[in-house]
Length: 93
Image 1: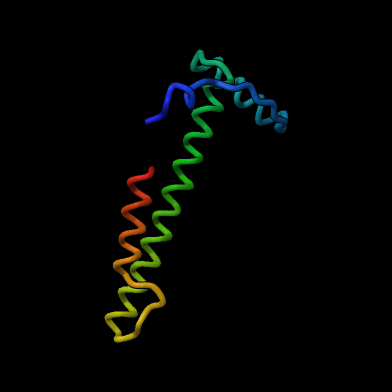
Image 2: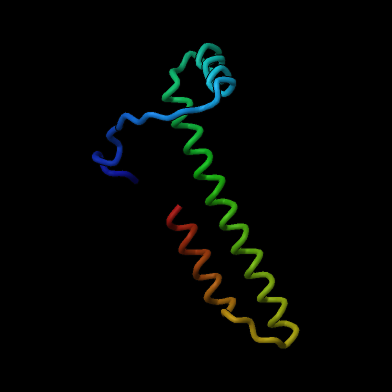
């Protein structure tokens, strides 16, 4: 949940290739929304995908550690610690 202060909008300026701006403008016409709404949704989607990728990478590392442990090797970090990290990451997203 975000505070009211965090939900306040701020103006930003950015530069992007003309072809991309043209595609955004096509979407604004098609869906009857403004550029800001499209860019906000795009940023949210990107942030979510990065967070999801991070979780997948952590799961992959945890699985590697479990395989090491089942083979009798000691991983550099315990699987329990990795699982705790994953739970914390999921709770923060």
